[in-house]
Image (cartoon, rainbow, N blue to C red; front, side, top):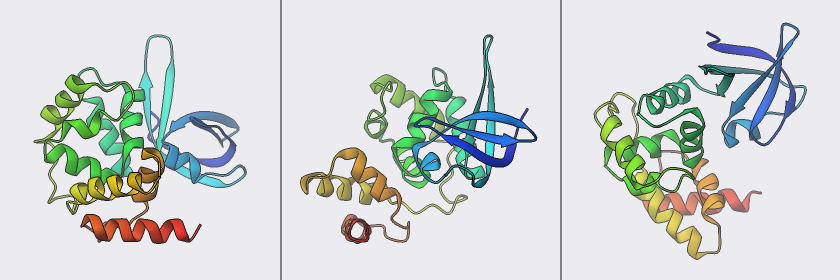
Length: 190
């Protein structure tokens, strides 16, 4: 199995990157955030998961080992494949996803294309006990993100834009008003 890949970025596309390592170009599917951080001709190192199917070998890449671990947890849920797990990771920061699952908020996960109410409930049911918030040092920013997301939507941001901005807000800001204030500061710096 390919656990990690280091090399030069050849091409970045909307859903994948080609990483050249040892004379071979590996096609690596990744989250939008990971892809946005990569540029052609830069050196990169990605943690990877190799999904083996009857007709294909698909490689999925992650910036951190924590992202890879969460991806693997999602794959353990019956009915969740690699593409759905990647889409869940695109929804929000890992800390927010852990908080949503730990608090039993399945409706948050239904915002992912292809994840309905039953599948979201299955994810929460299967992973709630496996996610140990204390061991990951994760603050409970989920409710703050929900409040800030709604406020940003009221200000005219799309849900995707608001989520992308909120991903950049440090976890030390927990309440909705703190997270909104920091998100607006980030948008002002653009």
